[in-house]
Structure formats: C-alpha cells, structure tokens
Amino acid sequence: MVLKLINNIKPKHKHRVITLGYAVAVTSAFVLSLANNTNVVNASSSYQDKTDYLMLENAINENIEDTASIYPAERIVNIRSLYDMVDSYQREKDVHKQITVKKGDNFISILQSMGLGYEEAHNLYMDFKKVYNPANIRIGQKIEIKGIYDNKLKKLSNLESITIHENKIKSYTLAKNEKGEYEADAQVEELITEVNSASGSISGALSKSMNKQGVPNKIVQEFIKIFSYSVDFRRDVRKGDKFEIIFENNITKDGKVASYGDILYAGLQLRNEKISLYRYTDARGNSDYYTEKGQAMKKTLHKKPLAFQNARISSPFGKRRHPIKKRWIIHWGVDYAAPKGTKIFAGGDGVVQVAKYNGGYGNYIKIRHNSEYSTAYGHMWKFAKGIRPGVRVKQGQVIGYVGSTGLSTGPHLHYEVVRNGKRVNPTTIRAATGNNLAGRDLKKFKVMVSDIKSSYSKMFAMKKENKLAQK
Ligand SMILES: [Zn+2]
Image (cartoon, rainbow, N blue to C red):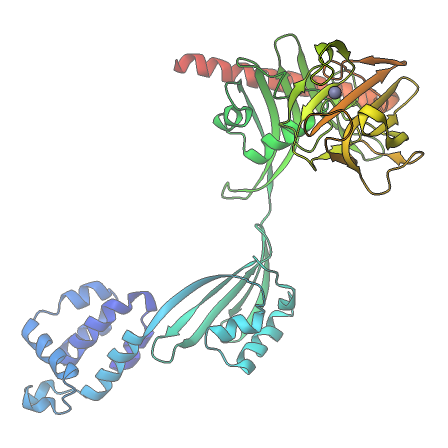
C-alpha cells in the first residue's frame, strides 16, 4: 500500500517522495495521515524524529536487513523493499532531451542512442508514420524526447513523447494516450501577420541605425537590395540622411517572430532627393517595387552591377589623370575596385552585343538594353558560361568576373552606361528601361500608395513626437 501510494505521486515530486518514503517506513500512524493528506510537502515536513531517520538511512546504506536490531518491533518495515524503492528513485530521472539531427542520424538511430531496442524504436517509427514519416527528418531539425531515464540501465525506461519540429510553426508529436498507447498528432501554429514601421536618422552603418530602431538584419539586407538599383549606399548615403520602412512580421500567438514578411514601403531621404518605393503585385502576379509614379525600380539600370555592393569607386566618371598614360583624359565610365573573381551582373535586361578581348578594355562585354540604353564592362578576368554575342540576359544575371585584363593597374570593374550613343555617368542615372505600371495596375497602385501614405504618415509623425518628448 505504501509503495502504491508513492508510485502514484507525480515524478516532479520525487525528491520529496524519498524523504516521505523514510517517514512512512518509520511510523504507521503516519501512513494514515498521509492517505488523508494530499499535500506532500506538509506530510514530509511533519516527519520530526531525525534520529530515527538517520538510523534508517544508515541501515539502508549499510544494507542491514535486520532492522529489529536497531528498531523497536512495531516500527519494523520491509527494509529490503524500501531499499529498492529508494534505489529506483535515485536511479530514475525525468529527461527532456532536445536533439539536433546530425549527419548520419535517422529516427531509429536517435532512439537507439537513448537505449531503446531496434524493435521498440521501429514500432514508434510506424506509429509516427501515420501523421509524419520520420524518414524525412533532415540535418539540423530539432527533436524533443520526454520520458524517464534509468541511470543504472542507461536507457529510457519510459518514453512519454517524441516531438519532431518541422519548422518554427509546425511540429508532430507521438505521445501516450489514456490507454497507454502511442498516438501521433500534428500541431500547426497559426501565424499572425503584423505590420511594423520604423524610421530614423542614419549615422554610421545603415544596418546599425536601422537595428537601433528595431529593424532586424534580414529586413535591412532586403532594404539595401531594393535600393541597390538606384542608390550606391557607400557614396550616396550620408550622415543625417533618413530612412523609413514598413515591413511585415509573421508572429506566433505568443508574440515570437516565426518569419519575416515583405517590405511594403521603403523610403530614403537623401540630401537632394527622397526616394520612395512601394511593393506592388501586378495583375499577372509579379511582385516588384515601384516609385510613387509606378516606375519599376528593378528595371532601372544597376549603378554598381557587382556582387560586392561595398566596392568603392577607385576612379570616378569624368576628367582625370590617367594612372598609366600619365595625362589628363576623360574617363568614360566609373571604376569599382573589387577582388578578382567578384561576380559582375548585367546592369539590366538586354542582349549581349559584344563579348571579346577589346584592347585597353581587356575582356569586354557590351549589352544593349533598349533603343536608348546600353552598358559596357571592362577588364574582366573572364566571361560567365554561355555569354556570347546575341545571348539574351536578365538584370542581375552573372555575365563575368572582376579581373585586371587590358590597360589596368589592379582588379576592378570599368562600367559604362551609354545613352543614345553618348556615355553618361552611371552613378547619377535614373534610367528606367521599361516595365512601368500602366492601365488598371497603375490605378490600383495609386490607390494603394495613398492608403499607405495616409495611414502611415500618422504613424511616422507619432513616432517622431514620442522621440521629441523623450528628449
Ligand atoms: Zn575605367
């Protein structure tokens, strides 16, 4: 009866139960009081005779079978069973293990590593398969195992549940039901889309300024990417310039960010101009960023068509003293210093007109974008695979790699933009090469823009006021 009572007590009270075990053994009157008393803490604290306790503990430690020699007859209990009980409490403990799937792991091997036999593990696998095939677990995925671990046998003596986390919002659990059978179940957490806004002044690195206003890094990277067609962050953005952003977070019910959504609006207030870009999904289902007038930002020629967006201008457009020819001549493009092998992108959609070794230009590519614009790229180390005259390229597609071929003092990209046959400064162009919104899309877009403007101008204004109040 004593044993049964103790076993019924939930495992988290185990530590107390051990003390209780001794107390129960010592006095039978106590058993009665315990049976009526569900409050374990009170029951154990009502044990008072410390001497008895210590003697009993000694008896257990010394493995003395005959307690009659040290105990009055009415207190004799089966010390052997008490010993077993105490031993099992000491050797068993609750486990809640979080495992990250590593290379070479599979569901069965993970369970085997916790001491389960193959057959046992395989049965669990089959039970699990009813809602999720554990063969699909991937490296890096998280698995939680709850149960009771036997320190002596070094295995799980009782598996309570296994949870496989598919991602931040979806998980599958195999757990014991009332009948003691394992049952699998899927849990999907519903996400709520939350719209956030932030604004602030830029001082130092843009990412730091944005982080300070609560914009996560992933969103900052996206923000930079959106503007990379029109802004050279290294050159154009200065201390005191301002940013504005509206972006989405997908959050769980308890407020944790499960994933980041889209940037709905991105604004940059530079010294001389303000650039506002809005996300819009057109009738064909393509999402892109547009200026307030509905001009597609992406279709504007790249200012710095390099994978290394932090590349500095080593030589600007215009009049300069040539480093090799040692005389004043006009530099018809802009030079970006970048490590050899840096990917060079097509500045816009178009057709490759020239791809060859071209004297002082070294390995050279020229792309025609439309009747108005062409771009040219010099000193390339090599061309990308498949790049040859006549080939159609997409904006952002890799066309070659930075090198130092031709008349060059070090690895850099010489980039030219040609407008109506005249070479212009690539860093100041705002050349839209097509795909602007029109017709119904433009109408819908304009409605969306005014909606965003009216609801968020208030929000941004409010934030500014709060800041001033804090100062
Ligand atoms: Zn150059």
